[in-house]
Length: 352
Image (cartoon, rainbow, N blue to C red):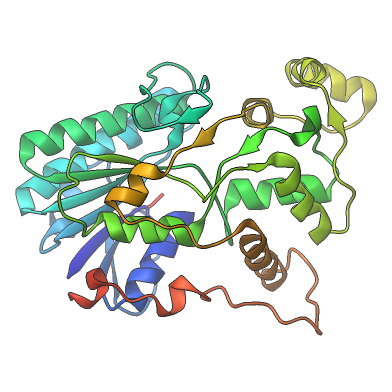
């Protein structure tokens, strides 16, 4: 089987490419810029840009499945160009080449910030707010509508907070802030973090590429259950031998966040709260994965303890933490990435 991965240079896309290669799948990675380096096992790299339709026709030729992981943009206009126009172009090229299925990587952010106690796929998408969330919602809508119009099977995945080795935001960013003591917990860190380990998400992506009868469906993908932010941050604090960040009440967090520049100037302390902290640490939502369990046979297998063990091992290997000579850490390909073999593998961004 031949597949194309857009966003192959990113955190999720690169992990997917490695998994597919281990499964014996022929992978084509779309590369927008940079040197076309020596391909990995079973991986062909091809130049292209999702925002330029003409560059996609050769990339999709002969592919049965496309994993559309490319995303980007800071302003709303730029985010729409990549996440909406880019998706439209991928669908057009796929339809012209006869691609049978596209796994479209969306985000739980499409549901906005005002979430119910139990979030399911039935909760409406929001089309106002932050550039990322709005453009991902619009991109998902375009994917489903054009998939139906073109006769291309679209399966949408909405992952929650994806962490693990190389995670730029939920691992590295928070790790550095804890290490520099530039983070505070809100209301004791009792808000819920719906985390999903990267390899569990890759499992869901592989299942979405091959399960029958799910065209046009969207699935929330998360871990087995949410954990308090305090519990997640405590793992990071233990790694770098730092105290658990102090707690501030929500009202004070709001004042600090909105008056961050003045606060930093008066106290000579760096900002310890960002907008995403206030948005995420005050959530008490549990993301339901029941639909994915039923229709994708999705079963997250990496517990928070194991996921943080693997993350710490990578942080040491990558030089963010000192190497412990006497410790034995699991390799980054341990578990499902190393030996997983499925029917999908056996049967056979522009990169952001």
